[in-house]
Length: 539
Image (tube, rainbow, N blue to C red; front, top):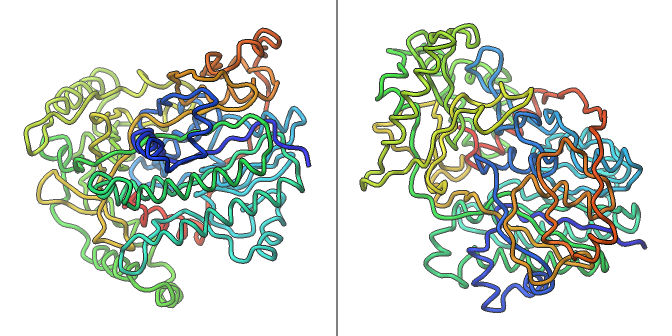
């Protein structure tokens, strides 16, 4: 069996803040070995350091203004309602698209925002945006059925690993990781990919709910145990991929959460948003019934869906208009990381702000006031408020909110609560399935980058950006680097003898087609919505 030339292992949210002390204690031998014999450093994520945006930037090497994926959802034509995003919304070629076009074989497993599984020379198992367990789940299409026959139910790490009482169930993490390594082992011998890209999500999940336990108990915490499980999985993969180059990356880091700001409540407080005086009582009742139904056990939820098949759509269609008085609103927020949209005349259905001078004035006022926002203890919590065009550019810029609120080290989150009002501007994020388990950890801008293998320069510590992964991977695979990529080749991570013998080549932009966006059908949207709500990423 031929070994992959390059294996990329993604550990979603992995951070050296946890890795370093665990390596010092001897708990992560496989990561320690890679660090000892390779190059490593912090990998600066995107602004925001959020899963859809960050992973898509990593695998395309371009910014969100060009690839078009910003958050888990995007605004529809009205400007106010949200629709789910999936991998088909990516408008830029990913690594595997470029490699397949060059006649190279690839294997992609669980990379976020790869549904429907793209057509490649090799295999794909779609990531956390996948819903259809047959159509779109794998490439080749029939692979999902074959895997079920061999391995039984496919286990995925797309939800918090909690038991019925809301406690961490690390046996779930072990089962998912062990099955994923076994599946990769089977597919390696069958497809012999030249690039293997596998992602594990568990560190992100345990950070969100268990970070205080890490701070209190260290090596004895659930966080530490999840990292040990991931290290064993990495070791299992290393045994199977032979002596090729190995790149370990994360899309962002993790750390403690100071709190959550209800940005719509703050905008109302500052006079930019108006809540509706009273809502449609019928719509409110339908929404409350929907919320109660969502808390039922799965079997009872299915029965309720059959009896009230239109309840989800009607309830959500009524939610935002009953909360916000759009004709009296100049700006609003959505998402959980800090997005602010100006209610622009001619763009939003009930836009109130004139394009041009008034638009810029509103943005300036909001940015200036947000810089003064303080936590209950008096500390400032906003590092910067960016205009979208100051960070991003490209044909998809319109999908990005007008203002991007960057909280200090992302230790705070900015929730665009469009489903309910809070008594103050302070809010919480709680997974739907376990409402008592609120977020206690958040993302951090710095992830990890580790390169080991024959191409690596040993003992080098570097600083990298997330868009640098794609051009570096292409070079390691002997492919020219397209000039349109915005990241750089991390030459300092590579053995100088290799660079001297094979200088990097650059290619003019290639006319690679990306497929048309494929929205979920009603069943798919319901399943993915439920998953994202259970993770706290949707209201």
